[in-house]
Image 1: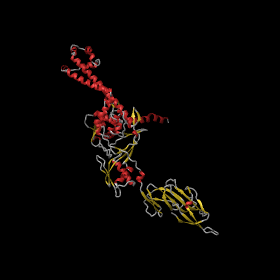
Image 2: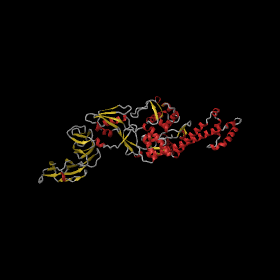
Image 3: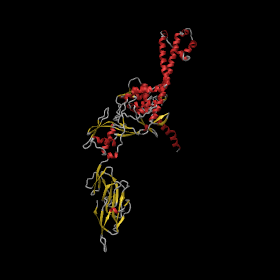
Image 4: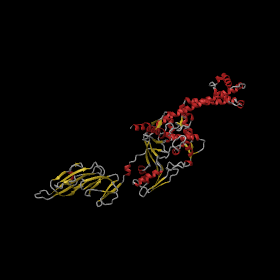
Length: 635
């Protein structure tokens, strides 16, 4: 037991933590899993504007990823097919049909313009050693777009899982603008496969959405599926339609897949079927309608975080402001340094301070001379020059000194000062600067990613009502078979969802579903009544005691039952005399003749029998022994 505790404490928990943090769950900062981040960073290092073989990219990424090239290739193709971060060339497979990609040595990729503009900045990136310590990899990329919501993600870790649905690029950026302007916003998923969506239960990413394929009527006997549901392929959709047809839930003549760049599944209908009436059946019984559940789980500060879409967007908006502030601060410091260097260089050349160094032989004296000669000009500089600055002055070539243009240098300093003023103004109003950045991003890339999934309110389908159809259930007393595929004159009209109750002569009964062909097994093999088990039909029964000949009667309704279980409506010791489901009947009961018998027969209305439970004992109708019972009148 101690060894088992040690195993879980020291090994299993490490494994669980690794799967959660470093494999299955994306980071909220850049919306990427580790393998995806390593692929993108490798592409950034390789970027020269040209396309690269995927096999080469995978090979380079292996320096950061310890799991071989196969998972890298799969992750790269999956990431490329999302359509945001990579430009591709060659056969990357078809997510619509499920067709696989070509071999990695035949296909090429590179970073997209959006990826290069929003994901990389070495000054904002923290690095850690790679798995073997030979190089460094980013902890997370400084993503300026909410990539986890844009691309979506799925992952199963130890004890937790995530399913983030993809969203529309423009709508996410507009939502961030609304956050900065402190106005209301609402975002819903958008799927690359299109379709029609009802997001009424989305609940900011904590609920679910209903998604339907786009089905159009080409003519009265032809339907065409032009868009499919996210998470399905044309192959899986056709399979679901075939299965529904085999089970008899829908009727089709043929189905053909003509999908290329766009989905085109053609369904031909048989005689007697109409295109308009089949659409709801396709939504009800096939993958033409699916329900997608959302569970936004991401890694935040090295811990799992279950969030809403609003919380992720607000987090990313604050993150973006910090990124832009840090970039401005870096640019400001760089501008100040450039202004300082140009002023220092101008002072050094304009005042011919270099002349004082011509006769000095040692480097120590050279530095001390420069330091002393610059002291009168400290008030013109932003800071006191240091050793690095002095080294830079000493490295100015003679040619540059002789051709130095003071006026040009002043113009450059003025331009740098103008830009510095703009940067400092942006830092003072970082909110406005962030708004301008998002609006430029929207203007530049928004048109490339139009909404593909239409938002509407979808009426909930009554599956039972759609699937309900009238059937005829027959019973053949000679063979004992009962069902919809039995042809005899003993027939019961019902629907495929009804339950059938069968009463046997020996006093037993059972309730069963509507079968195609089922053998009824009873002790004496005889069915005396058959009807729909609707829990409201009244049955009247008269049975006799073989020992005394006395008759008993009762009325009952079967309200509770378990399918196919055999019950009794009178005890085995008795014998059935009469059973009916009709009301208002009057019977004539003839008694066996006996000496000194005054009453030879009597009439009896079944409605006089009190209504009891099916298991209750009947009331005695007469004390004489019964010879026969016959119907006198009824409705």
